[in-house]
Length: 251
Length: 162
Image (cartoon, rainbow over all chains, first blue to last red):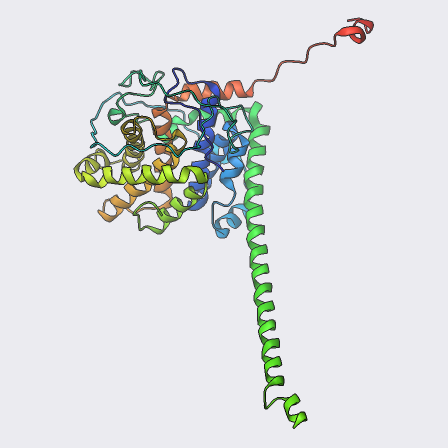
């Protein structure tokens, strides 16, 4: 499944690279899904690129079986290239709003995680996102999550999980926030991997279209088979009825 | 369907997201979404305050969805699985957009949904403590080539003149 367990981000005192990659894989999945549903190629491409960076497994899982056949068919026909559109639309500004706003919520009922759910204590590197997490027993979450409660600057936004999420006001624009991903995609050194990611998504779209065509063909064949069976049964019933050929011959 | 949205595009989005959730996480996600909807509609004035804080409704919705997930995580005393944060935030985002559409503030279009999704994703990542610099650092480390293999050792290596 696409939303594999992510390392205990909230409990970690530092955000490690595997954690970032795992989170990016999940973000890529969400964006890919929404991009496919809405037919927004740019969003799907962005999600694909982010997912590709986070882990190909999550990318593939996010692209497959997420959209209608019409969307998949159109995207496959138009040729899917991950790098071009993103490079053209890349933004470089990252603005962080250092203001604060309050949002309080009433007490909600506590709920425990479903027994048996395990969360990877350390998310493995590329390739394992989207698959079952390794059988590691997670450490208990600490109760003293510390960190800045207000945004202090563009480079120090939310270094740790804030203790007051209601006051969180990270208002970096989506496109600006992911400007680093755009830069990564534009980097000639990463062109091959980006194109590979584009082909993966394009292949997934094409595969989805072919799968839909196969299902439609198969459905027609099944309908035809059922029709013929019904016809045969009707003929058999007529032949064995009192007014049928056999009965008349016996008469 | 876990949410209350009636917009076909948003319903389709929610369904697609739910298909990506692991079976063992569906129940926690359902609980999270139920609790979140209680928060959203239990005090509509709070909801309206967040959704109407600026003219950028897509950002308001995306940020609000991330905030709500963070609040629920805190209220659950950290028992909520972290891995359902993104799907839950996506569902809340759809609910917020549906709310605004019913209120006549906007018309949900694929472009608006895409923009809100980007803002929501960015907000949730920031809530996790993942900044653009950390993302760049992760991508830079990921792009580094692995170290070269060590030279052959042992008898064969020594015989070969190592």
